[in-house]
Image (cartoon, rainbow, N blue to C red; front, top):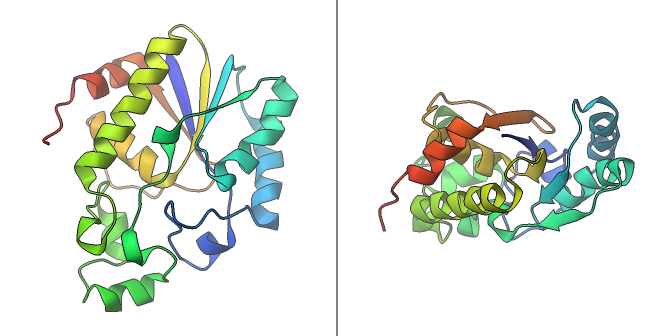
Length: 194
């Protein structure tokens, strides 16, 4: 079983280098809407199931594909982007000042996982557990099905970390990341510290 995880299209916050997190439910901008059309035209393979984060940017990206394939979009709350706390909506320059350099765009891109709890955001263990719950739900409900998941960069980074691939990477808008059954089994067996 292979599950295709896709990051949503571009929003104004993405262009302004502002993390939206969960607090700002941003719609796609014109570029993002165009990306959704391109994704629909170019996506490879057929899918039996479409699952998405409940945030607008994810739903708006996958809606054209849902119409094309005549598949309903199933919402999974566990696929929502992580919260950056009171840093959500700030530019990365503002974030660097507010955190006295403890968090900035370079730091964010240098590792897969980050703990935003000191700024009122998500604890990394909570994000891991939520991501594991999403994958477990998908595997249990849709084993043997071809599944496309529309989600967020933070969720995809956690998936890489949980599957043992710790290589830092930028998760581009509308990029497709395929995880096979073996990688997902690793996620199911990861123990999270509570």
